[in-house]
Length: 374
Image (cartoon, rainbow, N blue to C red; front, side, top):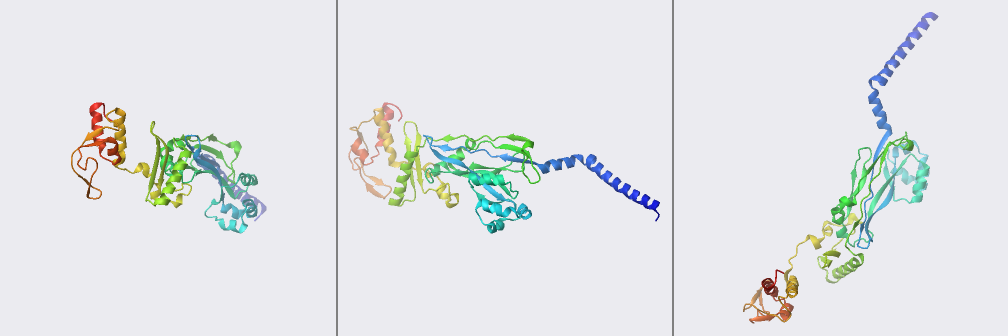
């Protein structure tokens, strides 16, 4: 082939190549422009929900009964570590673990494996300053109950749930109440999650200058109870003593201020430690002091007698007539007697009450007739 033909052939090939490239550029820049723009934005734009700090639960004096403690998790990206093995010994030294153990945790197919939790501020600072690409640090909170089993059934416990924001890429993990005060006051304690949108580089690190939006979270409110931790501690101690001495199936103690109805202390056995959620059964979760129904029986006679004394319908020397005869004891199927049940015509308030005579019916009836309903 002569030189002229070679030049023509090369020119035609170059023209065809550039024509193909031009057509491809027109296709990308004009026809598929919007699609590729959205794909590029999606690739580099990152959004995450910012969890709110859950409020604390306090006793009447402001002492902490439940609070959320900050925590930092270290997660390992096995895929990046395989590409950058030189980061392995550096990370192992910072975490104080062996390189062999750390290598065993790496899984390229299951990225961001948790390898450490609750690292100190000094270690966290070193990890952030190192700018290692194979790790990701995540801030979270863990619910802490300083008093352990004390007030456990009153406070309840929380579980973790995920809530995706409109950013959509990374959900916020937040605590939600599942029992007790944690559940009943959850909408006040939980707060409102925020949202952050940012631009990332090829290593998936944020470029702070190009942060798109940052809506801060609104932390939850603190909840103050009428409980007094000092009284509660005494009640818990006595409940344990009763269990140890008499071995009952359950124990319930309630301390209330009669004038206002405020609950100063409440305890039940069996109980549980909300810091160890995996160790308790369903029976220990139930606050039987308020969940179960009890017939007051003769213990309520003090209420009706007190009402009669308060209203002037009776005094400690009053006498009341009742029917003659003996009365059956339903508990033992035997006949029992008391001042009136033994056949006497009348009973005095004080001795009748001391043997649990059914004086409350007579006193309450007289109270209604003489003054007002008690």
